[in-house]
Image 1 (spheres, rainbow, N blue to C red):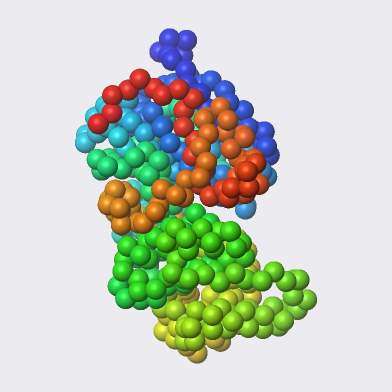
Image 2: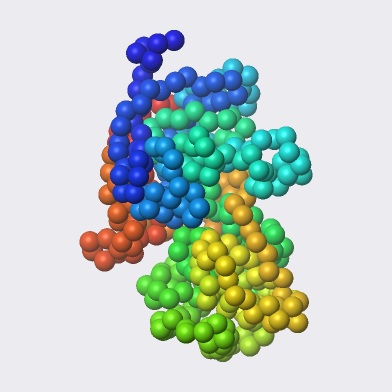
Length: 384
């Protein structure tokens, strides 16, 4: 089939640091096992921002033009051969990870650890898999999830970051009546608070260095109480850094009136001082969930963890979470989750959206949390 006879679509393509171009590409029909989706909402993520600013995210540098975006939802516009359970017009959330479905990790339900995983908008594998910042995309049907009736496209786009916290909460075995402390109240930290609420945590508190974000967390009902870490000069020695972490945490625990610590600690910053503090924040026998991606190598107060049997657990992306995430988003049990979306842009304004996300505040001084991208024009589709 000649591409001349095929329609085109708009895509936001990253060529290098801050070199993002909106261009037309040929829209190919879906292959066997795929469905075609008109993407109606994409939330911008911290990893997307790293690619935009630096052309890389940690060790993964772009080797070819890459379409960013992986928090998305839309409407099925076509289905390829062999696809069952999806029909044209169906509203779906797009799970961005494409697992091999053949390895032991996939067979055991831990497909987030699949070595052959291809993740849309990630430069980890080459050729890269393009993400969702395009008007239409073809995607494997088995990772497209139907939306509940009262779940909007913007809420459905939050299913991806929400899944990160659902996975972490499952690994921590968070249960009703437990106390929870969250480090960092960006979008991920706020969703950690929401998940803890939905699972019946008896008390949820948050720590950050940004008083405006802490005020937002408390005033919107995400956290029962907050503590703002004072800014200080960088510690000159490791011993000093570890001592400061312990003293800072003691001050926070005193403020929270929780001298023994919290049952579960979600560390959502990836910052070394917060990771160090999180061990002191956990109660004896408690758990620290490492959710934030940041410092590669961290000096830890391991003796404090070992002697008090504090479990330190890693948590990477998610597996088998989307149906639960979408049900939660539709249920209303996540509190004021819609408040997370603070700014909206069209696809042609994607570069402007990334610049705003990097600044963290708009021209009016309003805090930026989650930025949503939608098509420039609403496609003429009948959704149900």
